[in-house]
Image 1 (tube, helix red, strand yellow):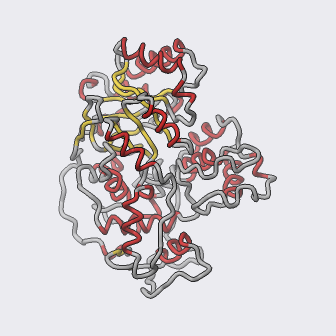
Image 2 (spheres, helix red, strand yellow):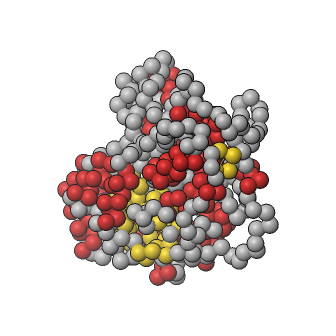
Image 3 (cartoon, one colour):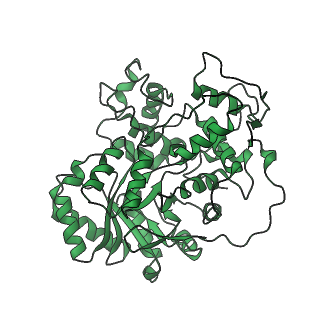
Length: 447
């Protein structure tokens, strides 16, 4: 599989000491008094071939001789909240779509009929490519696009941005129009945004409105939007590790190793908010479902018909609050791999094994997007979560150009971290990230 935005340029499956991650571990292992639960998860699973009852982690557990399958296609379609739209459970994300019209058509021919973009993606090229690729087939698809509407952006300015998106996409209406990456309630309460939405709907230019978000203030913004009935749909960062069912299942499988073991919950209120949104008829779409997407790390533990990505998708799609997910697709092979999870049912123990393995590999190195625990911990106002997210684009997604553009657009970068002792934010991350050193590295690579 070629290098993509969802996999790093080069990752191996070795521990720091060079030993193989698949070496067996004594099943009598216990947590030492000086070992944190997070450290226990990392240390134990990195050395395990079998952990607890039914949780197998070695590559040898996968069934041999997978049955021949036909061309992967969308296997499930769902109503998208009260919008009146029907979407596939897995949709095409165009975050890095630069010029490949044939890839868009390939996805459509396999039943992917919902395409997600934004006026800023690929410096505006994403919308243009989608518009050309879908010309003559607009009636077969639904479209989401987004604009980063600031509180001070006038209604007229926002209408001009929408009209440009319509022109780019070669259409006269947008199915779902989102206020992009909302991290401030003021962006939703703005009278300019609310008047724009009313005018655009009345003119038939948009069918449903909403917000997207992946910031530390996501929960606050979602609750406000629901309380004020401002959204028909939401697009939120949400992955398996944030789902209560994942932590419960891991804990149950690990009960023979460590009673009292728990998964650290970041954004613990998010699942309840999504459940409320779903109950109120708001369409719920998940993004960033691969938790950093360091897929090459997982290749030694996969089989062609059982991959980490498929397991991650099954976990999210099994959540009754989630209507569907959107994920960036950069190759035909990626589309085929992802579609194997469409309509494939709930996750099983083999999926849990892959996801738990992944957690062990990324412990202490991957930010939980949307967590927000680090907010306010930097006296220099470095936006730690944004720097970590952009680091993910560069290191894990292998998108250095996009990462550099995003980093340059930050109002405050991580330059202050170069001379900082690291003490102010040292204990801010519940996942144990060494924030200052990681920020220094990111700044040196992208500044």
